Length: 164
Image (cartoon, rainbow, N blue to C red; front, side, top):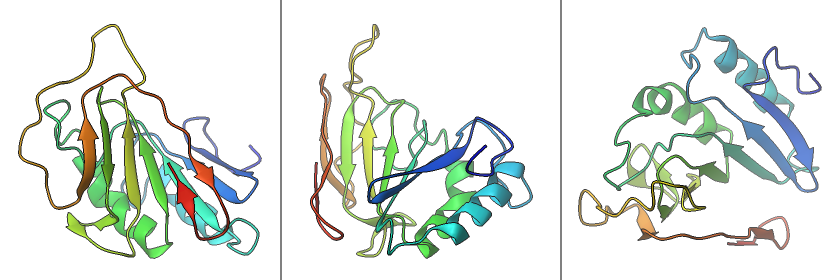
C-alpha cells in the first residue's frame, strides 16, 4: 500500500540508492489497465537524486533467445517497453526461463545505449533442470547466455556504476 498500488501483484519500494518496481507478467498491461496506470504514477514519483538506480522486475522476460517460453510476454513488452525506456530504467530482472542471459542495453530489439540491461535469472535451480537449447545464434543484444545452475550478486558501487 505504501507505493499506492491497489494490488499486491505490482508494487514499488526504495532500498538504499534503488527504486525497485515489481510488475506482474500475468495481469493486464494495456494503457487503461490498473497496473499500467499505477506504473505511470509510480514512475512520476521517482526522485533520481535520492534513488539514482531504477530497477524493474517481473517474471516472464521480454528479451530471451532461449527456446523456453519464446515470446510469452510480447504483449507486455509492446504495452510497457516505451514507458520504461522514457523513464530511464537501468536494469530489468526476470526469471521464468531456466537459464541465464544478460543483454547489452536494449530497446525495441536493438542495442541502444539508453536502454535497460536485462538480466534473465531463471538459473537459480528447479526440478526441471536448465533449459539447454538456444533457438538461434546470439542476437546482437545478447551479452552472455548460459544454460546452467547459478546465483549472482548485483553490487551498486555508486550512482553510475554497478557490477553483476
